[in-house]
Length: 473
Image 1 (cartoon, rainbow, N blue to C red):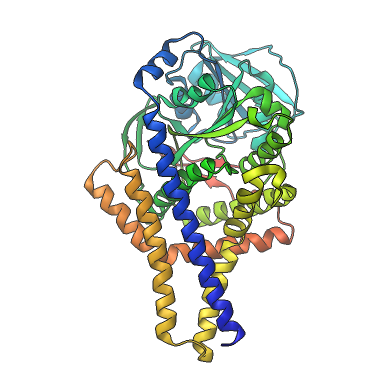
Image 2 (image 1 turned 90 degrees about the vertical axis):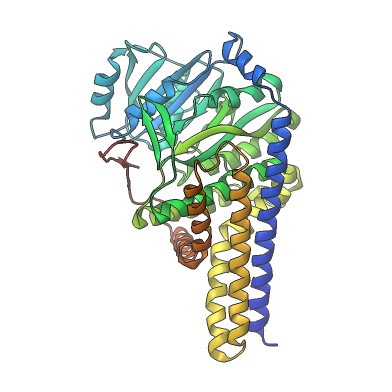
């Protein structure tokens, strides 16, 4: 058996291990969700919603040229069921007239408002409050990227809990109740993550979700399955193993004091959410009393975010995510295999290196090696087809498990037609979409190594129930 043949079998073993670990994470996630639901009652949330002692929240929404969607996002945020919260919107150097639209929609007036600046940010040009909503604040500032906008909002925030979402996000009405509950029952909680799902297909009027359907395009359906598999069940499993290294920037609730201790998200990060989460984990373990800061995942707090349904925008987003993951891992490389950081260092960081950052290169290499083996006669056509079929079945089984588990939750498909569309998306995923995703990630890897640090192409926003478009940084 020659070297190429041995290498091919090693890659196959890697691929099987990858799917086995992901399956374990998904099943751990399902076990954790079941345990969570056994420990809650509806009366708890009623008390949280009615009690004046519930910890108040500052909800932060950074935006850049989001005029097509920002009014709907703010309207949704203002409708949240929670005793006391404020909504802070940051226009980060927008040039599309976002401020004028917000002034008109929410009757904003300029005010003098100052806060304690723990983190340096770009200049704040103006602060506005709404005549219609006493808990709405809008900040206008010089452009400094999303992380800088978030840090500026924290400067003027008044409350001990910070909830950070994106400008294209829509929250379910009870999202804050579910996310705040861990803080009220356990003082060791540092930050809470929730479920993020695609918003493409939502029907929303005046900030209220009226109907939830699936994306119309096959690319959108592909991402619907991916979000259920990787961003929902697998991340709950990672949290169970104390290896939550990427809390999505679309939905995070964190103690303000801890946020300031860590220094906020890094403005130069390619993807600031994963870099911040890794740095947050490092900070927690570097503290003298590690047991007094934990990250948890709440499976009933749901946020919907717009996903790209055009190939070019999808490729740009995934390219940026790959470069951002590599950047975050390199900036926090001292945690890898370091027992000082517990399971985070011994499992979480190595997992992200081997099965996230390097997965695309390994899988694409496998495809190239299979072609080489076939051409050189090292492997027969039957062997190659068997390997491809095995890889296909593993991918289908993993995704099918995640989708069927989702069907046992309130995020289940609204009808049988949508359910069978999900099954079709699973079957088609490994027949081109997955391979295209691999190529994009490999390109992103090499671009980062050759010095590319920008945020990529802009993404057009269609908005919910809107034909307008805008651009995001």
